[in-house]
Length: 230
Image (cartoon, rainbow, N blue to C red; front, side, top):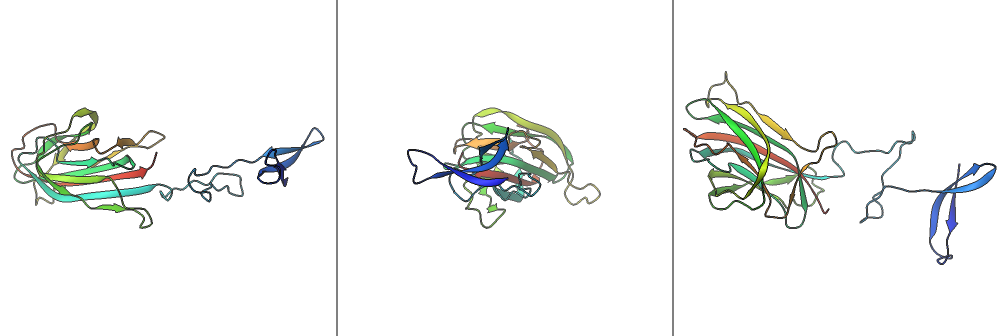
């Protein structure tokens, strides 16, 4: 198949359209070529392999991906609202893809009803500790979402709904025979949507169902998300 072009009026001396030439019913036809491309950068075009398959990244290279690992921190015995949260951005859309959680408890093993909540207003007060946001590729711009843990509970934001929940076992600290049981919440898998935060009012909060713990807990929590301008 030969590669050709077609010149269109009224710009007949300027721009051309990329076409492929083929024969249909003994006549030469021009088939317009199209490409999957970025609206912002001319060179960002999807590649096609020799076997005519569109090449898709499997390592996240096309998505600016970030993490914040809040590890480890003590939520004390007043952890009745957020023990950690991720706050949206004023300039980017935040698409949460993963949250991992594990814990130990000071003097008595316990099961916690672990909940992820989406809120329409941000939490306030408490004793927040800002997490370090790191891009998974140093070529990505600095992240604009913020993550924080709490050593004293804040006033919770306005709840939209629980987006996921599970019961997790928190063993006694320093008991190697019963190690922490990590749990991972995932979004955006198998064609489903990531959990989206739009604007700085929206948060994803980690809570333990409003209970008052009988003794202090130590938590390891990690947020992973993608940022884009959609």
